[in-house]
Image (cartoon, rainbow over all chains, first blue to last red; front, side, top):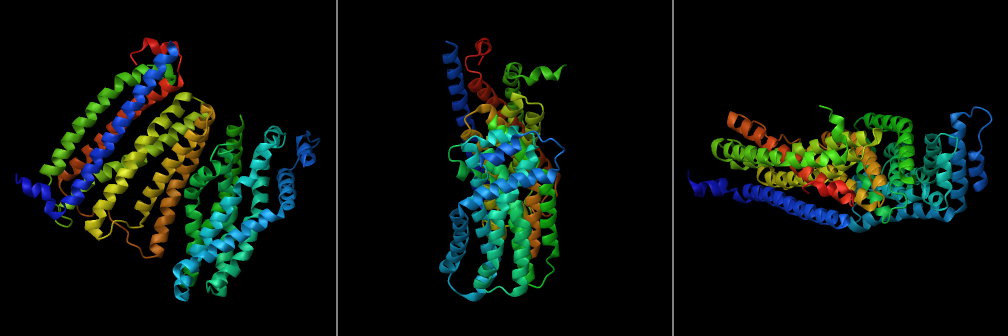
Length: 50
Length: 239
Length: 241
């Protein structure tokens, strides 16, 4: 497995890894925001019960 | 104008024809609208000004202007109609008349249809009639102007109808106008494409009847279906 | 099993809580398998070169992004006809995921387009429809957040999604028409690229991964929405929130 070749993706590394990077970024953003929202919702629920 | 509104609140003694309900609603809106003629003229002025911006922006080269003319006129028409949309329901919503109209014995879809008709008569129609002048400014030929007007005749009622859905959904919502534009503009895209496309086809001597037929079909379908959607939207917003 | 039991937020909440880890795990497994096949096993496409590997992200994001909007429309119909709160909450939960995936589809599509056709953007039917889909998602989210009364927001959003989803195929065909008029490029997405089984399986697995991921995110989000709306409800206390 030639890693150098793999990363360069035939010279189009910018595009390919830009895409996969965006993929990871979008998922990360969504998960982080969702966790924040779920946590806030939990705290709201706890407060309102007390 | 509560006289006419009151007239629509009274239980009709005889079976009322559908057209009469539509016409009552339309007539009321027309009377109200024609009182503030300034507003109507302003909408037309907006159209003219927006269209004039483009030659100023891209330069006076006539070949270029002729090429962009259909798109420019149509987009400007879209935006003008958009600006006048709140008028359909806002005043009635503010003074409580709308709630009473919803409860009136006349079918709400028919009242909605009447309102949409009035709106078109006061915004889309005048716009369509001025469009040839604007087209001339951009160097469009007579046959192309005919196609432009035909498309606008068929398309602007659709714009009023689709816009009515947006206006009804965003009643009383803060920031409603921009939100309504955001909701309605994507739905306007097919009308824009077919209307503008027809003129371009006329310009390149291709048969444009398909585009106009599609607009016509859209108008028919919309006229049948959209009043129900608008009535539904009004009930959602007022409950 | 009486499925109607789960149409109430009260009963759906713990069910969603139990289900989402499974979907997340499935998403992970499918993604690993799909990426392995797509990045390491599948051969290079002789026409497009390595760039085609972007499709393993672009196609799933695009497909699921559109699919989610259709599912939302389905829930919208349920929300308006059966008047169930949970249907509207599911719509609200699906929208952000669908929007993000559609934006990702546009982004990756643009990055794929540049080396392939030389330009970052092309106004063909598919791309333009995808762009409009982003506008539809954003419009829906803007509408439901602008209306303060939750029930009105639910129903208004449902009506909007139903009307807009009728419009999506119309937009697609009108832009396609517009394209043939302008003799624009009709972009074939992959052309001959889907030749080898590894490629096909890679795409399929990544699409499944995306789907499972979307379900997992939606379930977590709908739980948050239920919590937000049912504040003060005693049943929340009994549940592991």
